[in-house]
Image (cartoon, one colour):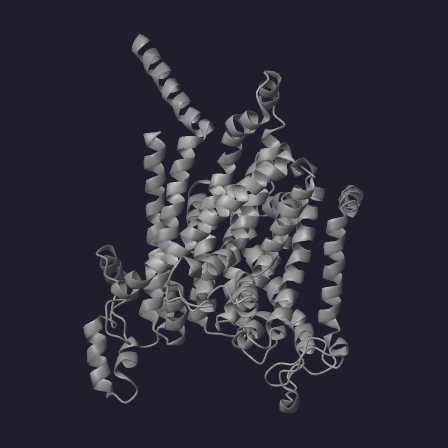
Length: 284
Length: 324
């Protein structure tokens, strides 16, 4: 069993390796994760070091991305921002994915009334635009890093529930599930040992693409002033603070946005490649 | 067919009720004490208590929800604590702006993305295909408010050709619409391309070619009709995304729509307005998606046939029963 699994993973990795764009995405992502981990060593200045004497400086050797209106080094803030944004993206998505996947699996496995209740619940969440839902949750909980993560996590539940339900429906009636039932396995065991491992592929793809969406959503919340609060160097919050200076200090608006784009682009490239590698049939 | 339409409309009712419950619950737990909010910190406790009683705030959660729902069904969304005006009127004054922005963005996305997707599929791996796929990838990767800021930087600050704020005429729509629709353009282009690629490899397309039809006729008459079916469902989802995009972009361009009103209301802790705004946006998105689902049933021959078949089976069964 373990050998077979290892073989499958190897095959997926081989297919993924053949896709240069996905490898590029993965490389960018590795660099970003390393940047987040070693931010203390990479950033030339602390992210909150104010220096009014050097405020609003154009990009230079000393300040590659320039300085903001408090004289803080934008490059250092973007570097530390990697840590904040990746943290929000990964943690909120993991929580949303776990809840969504469990709900979707239960819905698909049990069917009937359970299915109706869970699916109507996801319909309700899906009928509200993601940003508006996140805004509503954030307004209930108040601003802040943890609350922004909760808001983003809740918004990502329905898409995982849908994917997990659809995949569960395709595996539910397979012979090995029947066999497990015949030998007396309980529902809990069947779901966690037999169904979940077999529906992981589409969920992993959804998760990879979902982290990007979560990062953008969290940035939008902070941009609106409802997410991470200053002086935390979150990219959306940086853009929100910088937009009044767009006329003369364009670099304040450019770099945090580029950082978001690069991160989400890397995740999208990797996600697309993973989808093709995990399910070669889907490849257009 | 009628059966399907009826079922679909029926299924929308619990969802809409659920939205009212969700919105009410969320704000119920946030609101703190609206009576205190209205009267201010200096008011005496007796006065606050009297107002609480008057507003029905001392009643249970269920009875408060039922009276809220009753109000909603009659079109009453409560009173704005700050201005003293009905929330419904305040929302209606601004809703048009947000909907116009979202609708303009969806129309723009369709006009750009569907032709781009078709050309990309027909000329797969050509330069135009590569360019549109790169644009689609970037469009999916950048936050729409940042794109909007970059557009302001280029068209308003650098070139000075487009206005950076407000919404007073056609010219004012250009940047917000591009900002809001970037994601939708990307998604619809990719969807049209992959759906078209799948269709043009089918036998009946080969057959049409063999019959000597022009390439244009093959693509437009035969392929497009079937390729667009899955694209239409995506458009419904993209409308919901566009409404969200409008909410954020109204902040960027200082457009006095419902989105800006909503965000300002949260900052002012004006929760009745938040409740009303979220509810109205959710109801509109649900109705648009319901409409798209119904449209889908009309144009997808598979759904149509499914119902035709079931009708046929019914008549066979009836005939059998009568025969027995």
